[in-house]
Picture 1 (tube, rainbow, N blue to C red):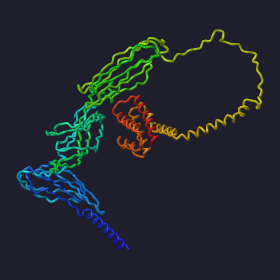
Picture 2: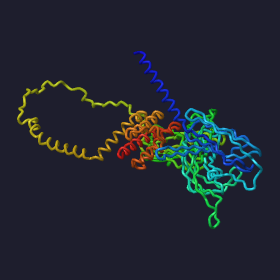
Picture 3: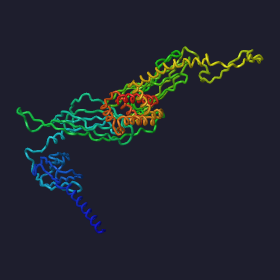
Picture 4: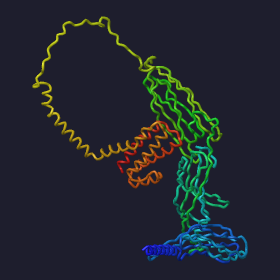
Length: 595
């Protein structure tokens, strides 16, 4: 019995090994890996095209050294796959364009590749390079011509900026006069991580004359973006990739002698760029520095300096100039406690140019005095770092005196607050009373129920309660039938649910915006059953657009996510946090009505 079991196990093991060996043979059966040359004899002024072709996909391709030749193009990769009558046909080719460096006999050595765990090699081939020929056949294909005549370049204005200093990136497409571009489309837009970015719209794609690598070209500006680095060190700017549709001339001509063009498409990339961001110096940094970088002016003004009590005036704290105007916090004035001051209204007028942001930002305070007197608004300071001079600068405003001409006079007790203790003075002669010796007491008598107040209340209560019950029932029925109103109430409750954590963290910038961003993502996760934290803002915009959500609500949602990202690098006031919280409640309510 034991011998029988041993034979069975031995048979199964041999069967398994045979199956594995057969599968490995099937994987490598019919593998072809060849090298094809465009010609075996060429002039020293001609080009040689070398194709390495395989019929099954492989890894770790290693080309030969190409001794005696220079590689002017490649490797370019092409893949072809098709199904015919249930059979799959596959082809993958690596292409190189070579130019000889001298006359003589040369050998294109073998290339190697790994397919299904085995290494395959091509057969070496000899090439004879002769003297220059009168009419060289360069073997340029349409794709070769397009590659040589199209170049996408990213021009960076500064390679070593300070943190929060403007850096402009201009993407230019250089086109040789030998080809004609018909259209293009972006394949991969860069995400500017660790940068605050602002696109500058390009309204017209006007071709201009220029040079590229010393040769005459035409170029078109496709994209402009202004970046403000938010941390120091080596920061990468991801490449922009485009698919360009181009017409390439051929050697053929039509009936009228005009050159015949062939259309093709090529993928071009601007390449990754790295900039070295310098940190702001610690030496000489003012105590009140809030992150402003640029060249600014600062002022504090009031709409009037004389007024009556209970009238209002406007005090404006304004910063104007050129720099990161959206990325710092304005200083707050220190006003006397006896003045009633309302929350400021933030205003901005900013234009973004190729050199960065220019304009002004301001906080407008409404002030209402209650008493007559003179009230000074002390001088306040604004500090910023000027990258042009490499130094910190501080501007102080002038002291402003507010005079309240008419109105009640504030007493010392009023200024100190409502802490005075007043006692009622009793007139003389009423402090003491004699004891009444005749109380006129009467016996307690029990009232009869019939005809009492309680009797009449119980009698008429049904007449009153029945109409109230009917009215209440109809009211509840009307509320239940109000689908829109109920949906609004549910939306408001839902907004409070997802933003409850953010509301508790108001005043704590980092915790508040982390909770706000998490609440926004959790809301979309609950409504759409997707992990939105893995999506970009463009992907979220696309999803909401497919759900037919209003564009204004989509933009509001995306702007809140942007505020959450900016809050990691920029100071935010309590007023801005409160405004973002209220805006988030409104956006979630609006979205819930549409999803």
